[in-house]
Image 1 (cartoon, rainbow, N blue to C red):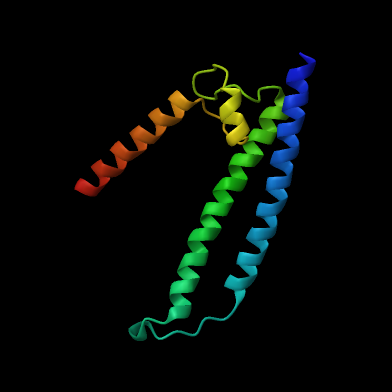
Image 2 (cartoon, helix red, strand yellow; image 1 turned 180 degrees about the vertical axis):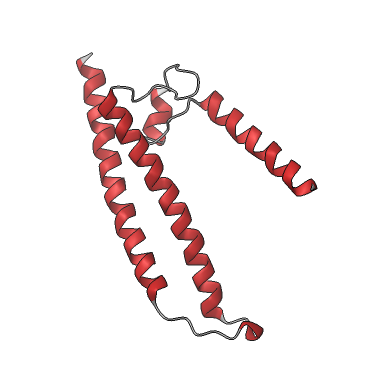
Length: 125
């Protein structure tokens, strides 16, 4: 039991460090996006392309931050390492690679499969 608590504490520290780094990255991207962009849409301005890439990066960072915060809340509630979908333990090797994982590998695959299926259906319309 004590070994498990040590592992969870180590994962908490990883998550908190990653959270801080992502918050810093988000701040830098937001500061860049605050800059004035004066573009001519007809000329395919490279600043506009860079802005779009930074907006996509910001969305990705915000999703990752949300995932980390969810994992940190799970630690606080004593539910870290338990799949939110099926309630089974998440493989410790998966948590080592993805400390913010809230789904076991089987459930993650199923969620991704369903998301692809939904995406394909939406494209058909």
